[in-house]
Structure formats: structure tokens, C-alpha cells
Image 1: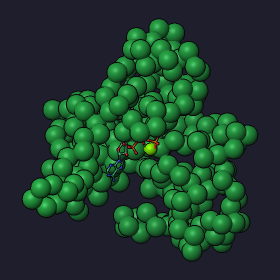
Image 2: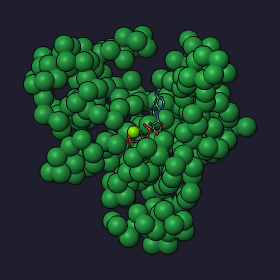
Image 3: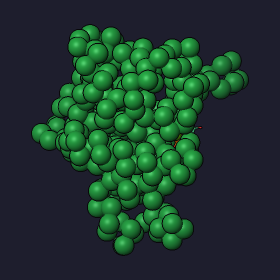
Image 4: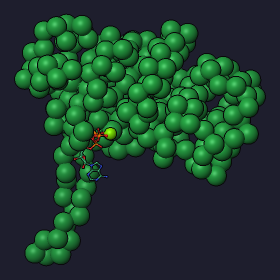
Length: 259
Ligand SMILES: Nc1ncnc2c1ncn2[C@@H]1O[C@H](COP(=O)(O)OP(=O)(O)OP(=O)(O)O)[C@@H](O)[C@H]1O
Ligand SMILES: [Mg+2]
């Protein structure tokens, strides 16, 4: 069952990868479970952080949400639709509600494609028209000038690349912006700018923002509510302020005390 008002809802997700092992009778496929019994919701328009250390399963969780990794168990609802029960074509239509900024801005952009084409790519894939106006508006929102359109990714700084990736993620007007470690590859001086930009976009567009991060400070700036993931399980969930003031799980306490 889905509740109206949740742009994303995960119900009892157990997920991971099939890995090939050598057994007595030859090669065997074995389940490597990364996420265990995860249930969570992102409400319309809210800012939620998923906090977890490296290897805790954050990117795996995003793959499940993005329709790229079918869970072993459980259901994923995006905009109220059970996405893994849909055919591929319908799944794409539902995922139009989602904008995604991948983990590493240095590897995420195709080096041989100019920024203009990078921004137009999702519009083409989704069959959305009015491309010039959308490109202009997305650039305005990420505060880049139109000069970048003719540039290649190698000509951009890390901060500019991240802005291009954010522009690409919002260009089709999604209901949720999902960011995987949005600041960890950036210089400290640029991190605050990117965080402010994300909050600015949230205010202007009113979309939900889901940030995954290992950094409690980043979560504090980018979210009102947080879920703490430890070794693939949710160990704590709550309002950001009370989570920092009154951490309940041992792992959250360690996070807070080292912050
Ligand atoms: N394609 C894959 N096949 C098998 N195991 C994988 C695969 N991708 C990730 N894993 C394993 O799943 C676990 C979780 O990885 P994941 O990338 O989701 O973590 P993460 O929290 O995003 O880490 P980081 O903060 O370093 O990005 C790790 O142990 C990783 O080795
Ligand atoms: Mg990751």
C-alpha cells in the first residue's frame, strides 16, 4: 500500500548483487545481500538525508530506487507506482519524476560531449520538447552562464561539473532530486556553494531532495529529517535536530561525537 504524499516509498527491501563463486560443481551464482529489510519514505517536497559510512549500501539503495537494481524482496513505489511491477517503458515514464546526480562528478560526464548535448540528453530520452527554453532555465537555476554550453567537461572545474550534473537532473522538472555524496569530491571551498545551491533549488522548485552522504555536517545543511544506515540496516530515523541532540543508536552516537 502507498500513502498519498510520498514521492518515494520502500517497503521491506532486501537487495544486493549476484556474485559468481567457484564451487565443487563449477561456477555458482550467490546472493550478496547489501541491504536488509529497509522501509522508508520520502514525503513530497521534504529534504531527507540517508547517512552512512562508506560501504554501508547508500549507492546500492539509490540503484534500487532508480529502477536499476531489482531487490530480492520488497517493493519500491515511485509517485505511488510499484516500479518493478511495471514494464520497462512504463517504468521510464514514472522515473521521469526523478532527477539524479551520481556520486562522482569527474567520472559521471562523458568527456567527448559538449555541455549543451549533456543537458539535452534527458529531454531527448523522455521525448520532451521546448529544449532551448529548458536548457536556459536549468542553467539559470544552477547559476551558470550560457558560455558553458559549448564547452567539454574537461574544460570545467569540479564545482562547475557538479552544477552541470544538477542542471541535467532537474531539466525535466522532476518531483524529487536525488544526490549521491554531492560534495565529497569537491574542494572544501566549493562544498558550501554547492550545498547552498541545492537548498536554493529546493526553495525555488519545491521538489523533494534526497541526499545520501557519509558526512553528518552535509546532512545537517541539506535535510530536515534523516535515516541512518549501518551495514545495510536502518539503525535510526528522525528529525535532524533531535537526531543530533539525542542520538539513540550506538553508531549515530559515534557519528555525532566525531562531528
Ligand atoms: N556490482 C557489485 N557487485 C557486488 N558487490 C557490490 C557491487 N556494488 C557494490 N557492491 C558492494 O556492496 C556494498 C555497498 O556498496 P555501496 O556502493 O552501496 O556503498 P556506499 O555506502 O555507497 O559506499 P561509498 O560511501 O563508498 O560510496 C559494498 O560492500 C560493495 O563492495
Ligand atoms: Mg556510494
